[in-house]
Length: 419
Ligand SMILES: Nc1ncnc2c1ncn2[C@@H]1O[C@H](COP(=O)(O)OP(=O)(O)O)[C@@H](O)[C@H]1O
Ligand SMILES: O=C(OP(=O)(O)O)[C@H](O)COP(=O)(O)O
Image (cartoon, rainbow, N blue to C red; front, side, top):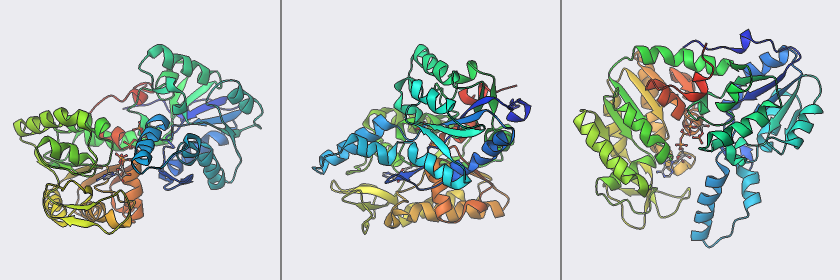
């Protein structure tokens, strides 16, 4: 797909507004993996070299409302209280990322604690020539993700008033039709950044000429947002490995007991119909057959459960040895592997086993001529942690985005940049 890129834009003296995907894993206010930040540097450096009036960067960072709700529920269960602002400061405030970027590039990055409005305008106005400004997390403004087009448009107009040219380099968020990722492209001359261009250039040949058999591995925690992707994967994949937190909604749908594991009950019916569809379409679905579990969500010595069913007091936090063997066997002859979402809570030393073992298997396939694409913030963090990123054909900055793109879907953030 041919995109209008920043190479074609006249940026000298211009106010440039760029959407990046700096939705990076955070812990206690610290960036845990900077792949997505580093991936945007080529565009940032190129734009700065064109001597713009200034460069405004914007991104989401988690989902403040949802993240807080989840953390609050967990805190309540543990009898603890949680202060919203302290929580946001550690998890969702973009200031930490702005500081990280400033250190990385050795240049000051001005921060606007508001995403749009008078303060954002004032920070931009007072920026030095070719200075960088980072706006607060776009998702603190509910209009960003609003279903109402008029609300997204109102926000996009406010963002547009900060600039003269819009650049979108946020491949990881290109599957979201949000104010800063799609709507804004209709209010300013819009161009793709180099990361967007590179991702599309890598994925296009796989879409047009997929090497079969294809095995898709989908894990992680975002059950609701990935179930739709799973459904479209059925069209091309020979085998679908469903692991990580995702798996328990499916196991429950099959009538298994899942104990205290992550489950999205609203999606049980969807999971049931997906399993039935897979059967009809002759797609093999692999779910975990054993687990590394724990009574609490913590980095503690795992309890091995040598069965699909989990007892009431345990939650599955990683794949067991038998599951890993089953997955590895299915991957043996794969010509294309697409992987999004870790197979366990790899951030915990005690629960990185499944993700690490499968990362090794996937890495070995490239050497055998296979095409291996790993995508997603946490999945990329995982392969980086294991030192295996170099051994993959392509490490995509987008998980959901790369999966949807590989399914041939038109991603709203990209469509808006088409030539
Ligand atoms: N069994 C599990 N229970 C709870 N969380 C899990 C489980 N397996 C994986 N996870 C979590 O899923 C998160 C990643 O999910 P997700 O955001 O969907 O992946 P990605 O960012 O790669 O797209 C990680 O933080 C990981 O700890
Ligand atoms: O991390 C992201 O997606 P991913 O986990 O599918 O790679 C993107 O930043 C999109 O985030 P979202 O899924 O909260 O819209």
